[in-house]
Length: 384
Image (cartoon, rainbow, N blue to C red; front, side, top):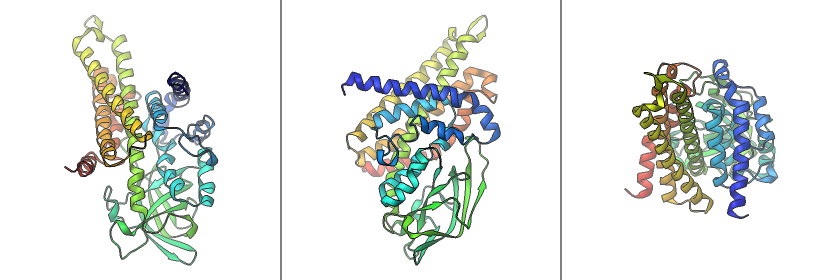
């Protein structure tokens, strides 16, 4: 495929995604926030366009595509759908399934992955616990082997799609004697097992995304659902975070663009002191500042994605992903704040894009690794 053909294919897919987001998500985002959920049918509609399967193997129902294509698609969904809650739950499989694809047996992969990519089932990742967030090596949920089963006891919290999930990719401690990273494993848990209870959590933002506190009380899972070997979970989790952080960065750029879109449209039609807001230098400068940050962050995103597609994913790349995530979320935060300021009183009202994203940005600066953890990890990778 020539560069021109590649760009045409990319633009065509992004156009399809834009139309989907504008028709299927944006008009309903405020209502779904009020309801605290969105219809499960949306999964099937997204799957019908192939959106859920982007980046997954064909034999599992997916469509292998490079990061150079996935990042623009994710940006478009976030920009034109303008709902972090919908994006978080609709695509929660993108943090749950890569571990299944990488480590699961062929039988488990074919059991779990295709129905999720078809929009028939929902997948969630469960790592964080009430006693700790970013300190994955300290997790306390246990899974002990009894014959052909694992018996799981413990709790997980802040789990996206936790209330609805049909499959849960779960981080557990299989070696109680090893209190560190070496005792951690991964296992897939069906959502209908006995002993699993779920409590819905209320949040500042992402209101249409179900977020749950999960409790495992003597949950029994077939041993074949173990992903990889016992004790190898920590390294896999750390690698999985890189993909999550790159996706969060792309989404943050899209949400920043959504804020600019709304602020610019408002400034063009709103008059103050006898002229449109765009005729006031202070407003124009805010809009330019928003655009400046978006362009710089988007260029960095493209560069980091290109390195991943080229197989250049060593320590320096990991550090760049961490700092890019911080840059992107700070850009999103700046644009949400500037957008609310330009909209004035209307920016404080529920139903505007800037107001929604203003509330949602905080979770993006925390999820996938806090800003502070990102800086520490980058410093370590760079040898600072």
